[in-house]
Amino acid sequence: MAIAAVGLPIAITLAVMAFAWPAGRISPRDVPVGIVGTGPASQRAVEGLTHQKPGAFDFRLYPDQQTARSAIKNRDVYGAFAVSGDSITVLKATAASPSVAQLLTDVGQQLADKATQQMAARQKAAEQKAGEQKAGGAHSTAKTHKQAAAGAEPSVQILVKGVDVVPVATADPRGVVFSSSVFPLTICGILIGAFVTMARGLARPRHRVLTLLVACAVAAFGVYLVAQGFLGALPHNHVATWAILSLDLLSVSATAAGLIRLLGPAGLGLSAALMVFVGNAFSGATSAPEMLPKGADHVGQWLPPGAGASLLRDITYFDGAADAGHLAVLALWSVCGLTAVMFGHWVIREGRGTKTGAPASGELLPALPGSGTTVTVRRHAHAHAHARRDDGDG
Image (cartoon, rainbow, N blue to C red; front, side):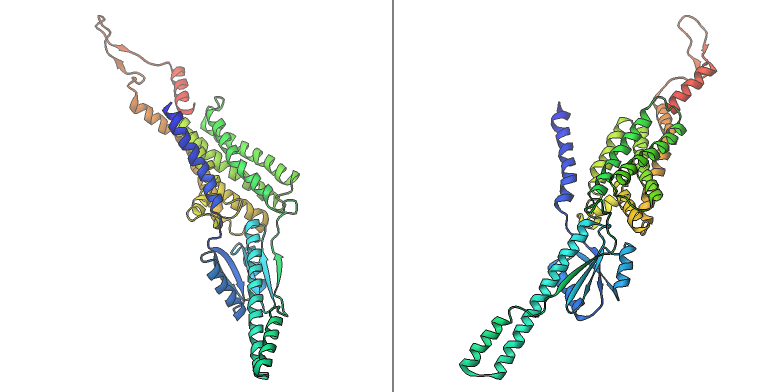
């Protein structure tokens, strides 16, 4: 009753907060963005954004648009602003993050509006000064007011042009299918790990490892058939995309299987809390890691759900640019989990050996009361082998 009345409500509250807190605090934080050129217009744009949104962007300077495009394709920046005297070009990549791409478009429009207002103010001041120089007295004052009113509407309007350098799939323009395909992988991976570890038919560790590998590869192929074959959300690098889906599933399932092997049923709860309530919530798959609160972005990218989503995006749309770190994270979790599955029975056997007082094979037992002799008990070879297999591999 205490667990049901206190423990479970606390766990549920923490689970809800884990998902709701990052979603409710989504905002740009040091989002890498490029600025093309070092002229006065570009400098004013940087100063204006720094003043309006302090800490929102991490600006990188590029000499021309071609260099900025290359930086976007290499995942160095999410986009770039090319500011000139009469226009602002927003270079973006919806494939990197539809939400960040929309943010950059809105910021570009804000820059254009502010530049238009500044131009109108300068035009108004110039007309007032010209009017004061040409005429004097009351007539000149009326004329000046008339010219000032006319100057309120600028003759030049700053235009905004958006260029999608790396567009998202046309069948998934908002990236909803992509994020919806990534989230179930975590739960499916935990289910695979739990089944493989608890199945009585998989007696030996190598059988469990082989089953994990096959199950993850086949499940990833099914996910790819749905996400791309049916919904068209993963349009490029088909074999590599399938391989990354398999590795993502393996990193989660191997971790779950290893924890269950070492900790028993508690390992299932620990893997679910770590991967679902922390990993999925902090993955940034629906927005971007730089849009999450500080700390949550780094934690999410060190767990398989966040690293898997980022790596899948890099492979599918950016030809594997900047994927080394995410690949290392998935490989590390996979290796640790498979190692626990293979050799976890040694830890369990060691623990059992220290707790039990059962005599080993061939050990002399105390004399039975009234017999006056000792009794030597030896296990049958077949029974001993069967018990060892059950203790080590079952």
